[in-house]
Amino acid sequence: MTWVWRFVGAVVGLYYRYRLGKNAASVVIPITATCYKMPQPPANKVESRDLSDSHAEIQRAFPLLCSEFRATTGNTLKITCTWRSVARQYELYQIGRRGIPGEPTVTKLDGYGKRSRHNVYPSQAIDVCVVDPAGQIRWTRKCYAPLSSLVGKYGLIWGGDWAMDDFPHLELLSTKA
Ligand SMILES: [Zn+2]
Image 1 (cartoon, rainbow, N blue to C red):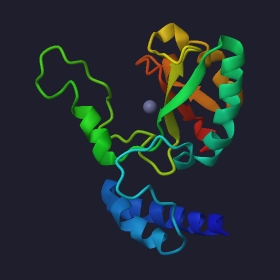
Image 2 (image 1 turned 90 degrees about the vertical axis):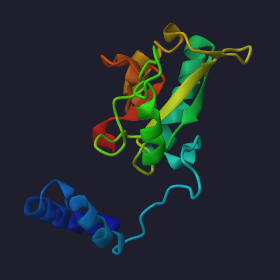
Image 3 (image 1 turned 180 degrees about the vertical axis):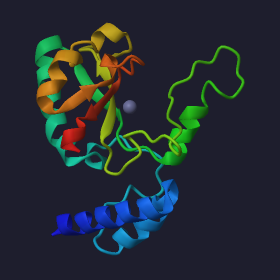
C-alpha cells in the first residue's frame, strides 16, 4: 500500500510546491514521513560502500554487470561508494574551491542546492573501481570504457559517457528509479 501514500505525498507535495514555491519540500517531508516508514540511511555514517544501501534495482543489476564485466575484460569491479550524506557531498564539493593552487574540482554538485543521486536514500548511484587479476586498482580510463556498452541492458548509465566524464560513476536510469 505504500504506493498510495507515495501518491498522496506527491499530490500534497505538488500543492505545497505550487502554494509555497521552491522551499516547500521541508514542509512536505514531515507530512509524508508520518504515513509510512521511510528507509533510513545508516546511523553515524557519512557515506557507505554497502550495496544494500543502494536502490533495489542496483542491488539486482550490479552483480550481473560485474559478472559480465569480468567475463569481458578479465578485471573485476569493486564498489567505493553507494549512499553519501549531503554533508559529505559538500565536503567533496569544496575540493578544488578552497584556494589550494592547482587542486582540481571533483564535483559540480554541492548536495544542498544541487543534489547528487548518491545523496538520496537508498542511493540511485554507485561509484566503482576496476581491480585487475593481480588485485591492483586501475585508475586509467580505458579500463572503465567497456562499461559504456555493458550498462544499458542492466538499466544503468555510465558517468564516462557524460561530457564531464565521471568514469567511476554508475547510476540508475531515471525510468527505473
Ligand atoms: Zn558517483
